Length: 368
Image (cartoon, rainbow, N blue to C red; front, top):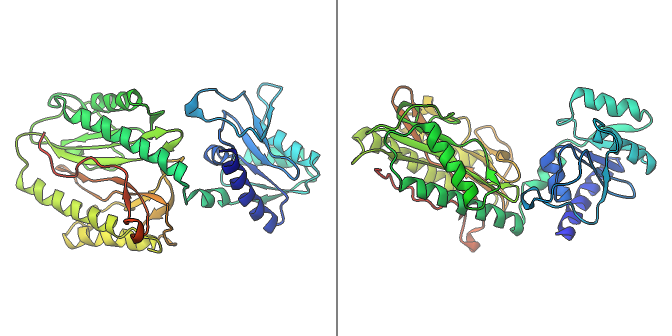
């Protein structure tokens, strides 16, 4: 893996040189981990003129879930408690005779930016922008393997929950049980707060579980994800509680399922982000649910659960191969509930079988 991290840093360094900065300060934790192999608490990465340094407030954690720093990086631990790793990294850049330093302005707070500027006034600060995030969009097969294992864990946790008795249990209780099962099956932890929504809450995007109890006849929508070696996946499914769903539930489910299928089938290298969104959105719009549509059909996943690309109506750009994304259309009807169906997939060319589905729990409308 050291060669992988070195190659990533080399690609970033080329971008920095092209913009006139011989050094870069990376502070966003996911970006630090992507380039260094680990992002200990309070750490930043200096892409130096002569040497790359991981500056940490505390020594790296030995737990596998936290990752291990690339052995080719120099590790610098702050000597004083409360010190600022970004300021220290800027000092190290000056010591390496850098005259300019690219920083992640979108991540540094104003006060932290000013602290760096005041301590090294001779160092010209430039904006690194989203250069690292852009590098992270296309995943290598090792990254995809971590996502695949995380998806298997999430599928397993969800499958076991569906085999248990659900009626009478609260949304909050079910969410906590799912998160426990994720860890039991080898996840670092949940990829994001697990959402369990029942009855009138079902289908609501980002619903926070409440003490509402599962009742017969409810829609039950679940959205969860596992983190494995830092990589995060997502799955969402909707079920019906009871012996059989009502007609309106079947109709709504079939429409959302058709929209989700249309979005999945449109994933291909070269497909425009907005066209993937449009494929799913048109199905729901034509069925009369224009007012209930979510702002996005999907998004990228990786070291963060919400990465580029964003699959929305105004999104600019086109998909590449080996880009993992979610496809997650949904409809929520106030007072009645709704449906969400959410998969994590990897964009693959048709010659390789088309999009690779990572989350494989059935999308059949099950009555539980």
